[in-house]
Image (tube, rainbow, N blue to C red; front, side, top):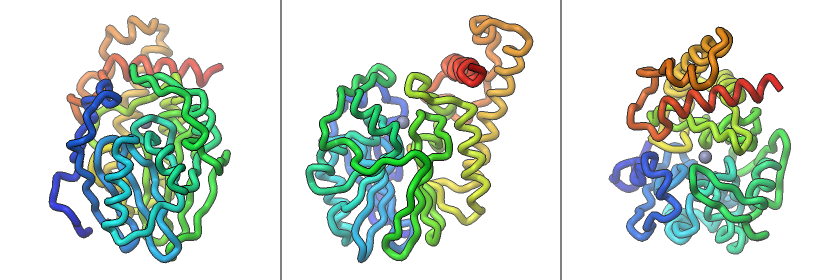
Length: 300
Ligand SMILES: [Zn+2]
């Protein structure tokens, strides 16, 4: 793993600042590049981690952070010796991952994402108090899919897979088969406490557990895991994350099955002490509520 710039990996460190992202001043943000394999890199800035495939067939980005950072991201791509972005894949529609779509679309990139990403971008949404207005046409994916698709690019075979979502109803996982790298989008935030289950956007913790299980089954101890936020991780980190969630879900489920109401379940503090980061931006009570809503949705 070659560090191009010796700056803290998670320069943005914005997990605790979700509510102010939309208003944040991006002028001070530095994009940090880490080449994890030949032709595969990660860009850290502010917002979701960006995966890069670059080489003779052109440049593919996975996610694009915020519109204000597009110029810096394009410069970081050029600094890799890569050509301008040919393909842009959105792991999901959230504003801190797809905020640069309009700029990249106007610059000639072909935007690729799950059907529900296009639909939710076009409709607009409010996520944790941040209003995302309906996106302009040039910001919308022009290639969409239901289950996934495969890129044959830069000597690798790169699968874009919808495994059932969980963070939203449109989360894709991107896997470089030869390089043995996986980009998780926000279905995995590394050392950030509880996952964010965006129930209003079709997120569901049971779907998340299922998706994470599928990724664990298709990876190995050598796989480099790029989380949606946080530092580069391993399969064992992913397994620990899934186990933490499963543990929390089973405690909430136990109360629900015993006949507790939601308010009684929240008051019982069933998941206290379980999360891997007490400063994570999802509070215990909010996780319990998201699990509860997920279980309700699943039974319908
Ligand atoms: Zn997200």
